[in-house]
Length: 243
Image (tube, rainbow, N blue to C red; front, side, top):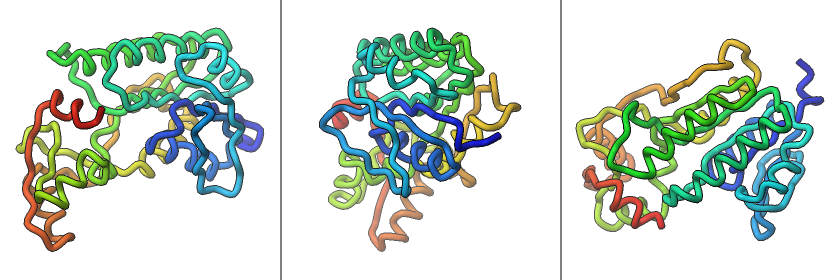
């Protein structure tokens, strides 16, 4: 495969996950196209710069322009707890992928969702979008990452860690999680674009080691030389802090 002749359209590239995917794709030799708001700036760490199409993810004309000519599309759901907005974005993007007959779609679902519906409208929306992605007329790979280590540095998390010595995560304290980094996600996405065996697969992605909430707090506390404990919070509380 001559990567220099391949163009990847990366939708949702402004966030941490999308930026890592962009960096990994450029490092692998791909020519990249991204969709950005006019006020946003590229922070790519590579020597090359992506082709930029300005517009919103809900804008079918901007999305169509960005996708046109792409040999693969990578779509990461943006960080939002508005299920209606998420639904509109997913419909616009998946429709454009189908209309342009894009050969490859990698859908980064941003999280691992339960197999059954829950009481959370947002989680149920994520589940529905995975099903929508798998019905697109392309060779589709769905990536479902666990939790990201970068979440510990988020503005709704790190002040709690530094100020109260608490890691507030919407997760049961006894649940063991294989935390991973954005960089690891980027490498996995590139592998999904290039590897025939991963096409048509739903892949749960995590780091090398699983830890419970208490173990995470202990390790982070040792690294920071601070007493830190894990605090399980509800998705509703997390949503209020993020928004």
